[in-house]
View 1: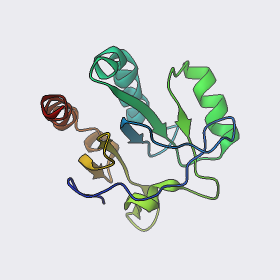
View 2 (view 1 turned 180 degrees about the horizontal axis):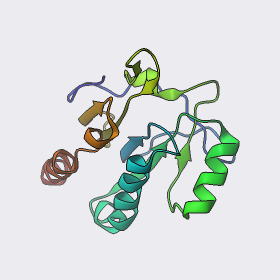
View 3 (view 1 turned 120 degrees about the vertical axis):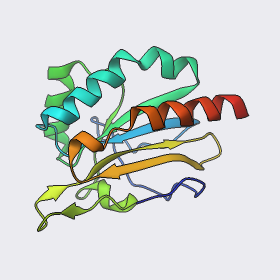
View 4 (view 1 turned 45 degrees about the vertical axis):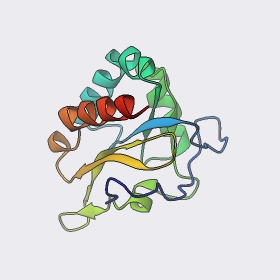
Amino acid sequence: MLTSGTRLPRIELEDTAGRPWERAGSVLLYFMRSTSCPLCNRHVRDLVARRDHFAGSGIDIAVVVPEDRATAVAWKAERGIPFPVLVGPAGSPHESIGLTRKMFGSMQQSGTVLVGPDGVVRHAHGATLPAAAYDRKGIDAAVEALVDAA
């Protein structure tokens, strides 16, 4: 898993229209375990509810899913997700930041990564169990520190 203070590696991501995604400025990436994961969906609802808070801090949000583009398109439309939903052009992008499959290879890890405008990771947190993958307090502290540093 990535660590705070390191640069975000090049991650190949595409949006639901198939366009390559490039980070511009600060971004919070939420890597879901699966679009069918109830806890991951609850975490996304929290991000949607708090999007104005993040936008006011100059932080974009993007959700990264391990499934294919068709699944991501349907999930985004069904849930009315207002920010980019990203997929890997060839397989799961989770592994590119160290979120692997654990527990006999059956459980995709999920987590969050906050990247500053300089491309430096300000917060990185991952977990095998979805309940532990969304560290709201850690994210809020990292956002506050990023805003204070600006």
